[in-house]
Image 1 (spheres, each protein chain N blue to C red):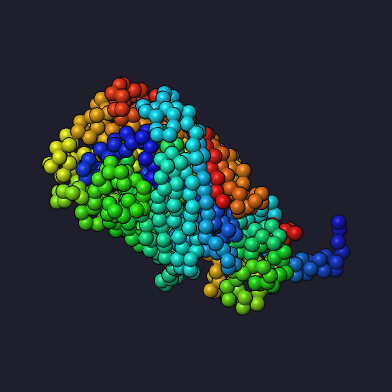
Image 2: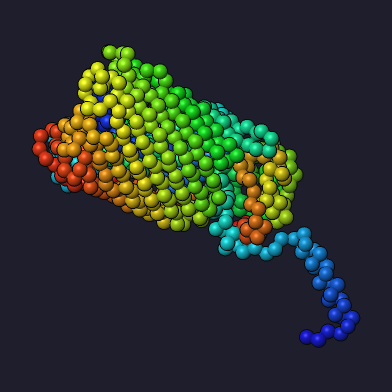
Length: 463
Length: 130
């Protein structure tokens, strides 16, 4: 999902400074966590939304949802004539503790309400073995449209001896989009966030590639327990990016950069579904070399390695409790940025990203979620000095959300067509860009981290 | 109650016969526990609502029903259609203990419920569905 408001622009600059580098960056099209909710899957399977999603609304998957995804979105109730189309809209009102450094185009410096996004999905079974999750989105904040998420899968069951598994292939445009668990960049809490907010700090390259790469991944869930995935990615050309995303590339603000050789994504996890509850533990990583399109040769190298774990208590679905956590460390070797551009202080940098969230849902209708986020990294005056007093990217804080999902259950009114979530989300910052105070780049003044504290009221609809 | 010797002997024989029968019959389950287990083990794919089919057919009225006979459910496997099963308590018990053993080639993606008492609870719940 591409967002490009002026407010976000300054965040993007920081992001690029950490996850990639000026002049050689990949287009980072996902800053806020995108929202997805796809009722066409419910119509296809005859199941209620709550079968696949914790709390009766996407995207946090239950084991049933995990297996539906890994089966290439092809499970069905056997009836023909299902149309794999859905639509979604997210509306919100956002207030920040202090006014935004500058008012986004078409909006005010605070207390903004917006139809943040409207999406159409091609989502469902195409053949017995092929299914899709394809999302096109119009951003009511940026006033642009884009091919948002792309995941076309083929999967089939395989039996070896007395063991069975599912094997699949995914053609997609985002490394963590393919993951079936609720811990990696694309799918972790918060499941929606305001475009008028300040995000959760710099993040590793693997979490900033949506829409700027295309990849082919092979995966398996073997014996219901062992998940493995390997993907090869290449960056899309500037012209392709322009066609797919009405983006900063289109207005020439950012050089998209390109991979030097394939980017490699890998994932290993152990998953245990005991029906009443379930857990997963895993490892993942991403490696890529990024070079400047107009000055190829030297490339900055990024190596991301992460660990993650998740637990869900589902019981009889009346009281649902979840915990999701992940930690990612990125090693950056800035051959181009340091040697050629002299734009970083260090040739070798690190970035660390920790996230944890826990949720409780009652009767698949009333939800409360609390999360912590923390980003730390090596001080680098070239990368972070413009906005950080100590030249560090360190950002930390918490997220609180309460929500109500009136429908989405088997007996719900209008099921499976009527789907809505009404929520209130609060983001509090203890650190931003290095400390409790940072430099507002736009106005060149001091700003407290807590000035960015953000309250968002949202209404999320899907049909 | 004091029994006369002959009557006592008769009662003993009857008790042994009952035990012998019970060796092949299900223990009585708890339908309330069965409702919770149904939600945990079965509810994602099966509904207890009459006429509501998901990936699997509704289980309301399953007792005494011929396999693959829910008229408006289109997802049966050929194996299930040809199984010839009539769903009694015993057959349900055997099936949910080891689905792939009872109906090889069936579509149900379920490894089975090993706990006999839990199966009895689920069956008690299913039999209570109207």
